[in-house]
Structures are given as structure tokens and as C-alpha cells.
Length: 322
Image (cartoon, rainbow, N blue to C red):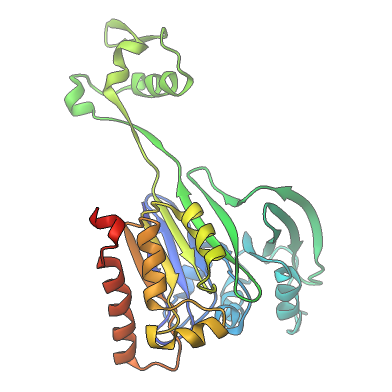
């Protein structure tokens, strides 16, 4: 299961840290306020996901870099078109005469168009940007236990929204099966995955046909979590969100303005409290969380904004009532 924590202060630039149960690494979404991120968390980060490079989403990349130099690992950076040059520019603004090759390697994945990704590599001390390859598809990052897919949203510039999707898992309840555990469990799961119904499974001194044991197994659906940052509250963006994040367990969604400021939201290609709540309701998100609020609001106004979001989730539409 994914565990996400907003690391930025409530009125500051956004930063969210993700972890996965029984997984050695963590994942950083956005490089806003980094004051609540520890050195250990940044050094244990395997990939960074940036929606776009407006200052409030990228301003603390330098702090991330500062703590990762010297860990001697490859770290993935995912972002929209142009992020490779922007990362290189930020890095090359410093002097690196005491840093040797191998101190760190950044692999930068640019989601340049819907379904097209260009991958670069950059490392010290020269920090030349080297194009590695191009790939196709919506999946921008993949691990053995989950994958991350992306869509482009309109914020007057393209911004990336990310969905973390865990792999389905085959589970067995040993206690209620009447058997002791053993290698037969792995053999049975493999037979189930490959649909090998006539495979002989030995448990103790007795043989069984795999199909006769399949009732002991069940498929546990993989967990899902979404990160939706700056986007205009318009029909095209909402259509994409509903399609890509439908029934996602948890989604963090930008709710930059209060409802009374929706005209300002429209002019600045942002979403606002009630509209973010509505699209989460229509997308049937189990646990939607409003984040990333305008710095013009004080703490009480942010509480009002969150209340507007939550009230919209509770409102019943005519379709719901029928």
C-alpha cells in the first residue's frame, strides 16, 4: 500500500513524499518547500516526479541535489518537455571541481507528448546532457511492484499528472487452508498465474491437481495513488482526469483558490476548491485530498477552502439521488 505525506508547510510550495509497504525506497513528488524533508529521506529517494517547473514546484531542487551528491546511485527525474535542460542549467550554475564521476547519475525522462518519452543522462563533473533513447507509452516509471503512468494537463503550459499503480498480488490464507506452508504455495501461485490447471502439486505426502487448489487463492487488487497538480478547471482536463484516475484509492489534487475566487482561477489556469472536489467525486476517488493552496490565504482561509472542497464531496447530484 502506498503511504504519502505532504512534506511542505500548509501555506508553502508543495512537496509530497511517497513510500510503499515493504519497499526499500521512497519517491518525491514536486520540489517545493523542503523544510520538512530529512537528509535521509532525500538520500533514500529513487525517483523524483515534477509536474512542471513553475518556481513553486521546482524551487528546492537545489536542496535535493545538495543531499544526493555523493550517494553514488542513479536517480530518475520525471517531468514535462524541457526539464532535462532545466535540471542541467540548475546543476551547472555551481562549481564542481571537487566532485568526481560516479558521485551520482541522474536519468531524466521527459514526457514530451502524450505517449512519447525522451530519456537523457547527466553526471559529474562535466554534466553533459546525453540522450539515451526514446520510448512510447504512458508509463514513465516502472518498478517490479508498481508502475507510474502520466497524462498531460493544461495549465497554459503542459503539466504532468501521475498515477502510481501497484501490481495485483495473488494471496493465500494458509491458516484456513488446512495445510502447512511450503514450496507448494509458490508452485500453486505460479500455476494460477500461468493457468496450468493440471499441474501436480505435492503437499506433504499427497499429490493434488493444481486446479483443485485454486479456490485457496484470491487476487488482491494493487493499490493506487494519484498526484494532480496545477491545471485549469476546464472540460478537457476533467475528461482526462476522470478517465485516468477513475476509482483511484487516494488522490492529492491542487485546490489553489477558494470558490469565491474562481474567476481568478480561470484567468490563471488553476483549479479551485469546489471544482476540485467535484471532479474527485465524479471520478469516484475513495480518499481525495486537497493540497497546494495560494499563498495569499491565511490559515483560517485555507481551512475554509478545505471545507468547501469537503462539502462538494458530500453534495448529492440529481443523478446520485436517483
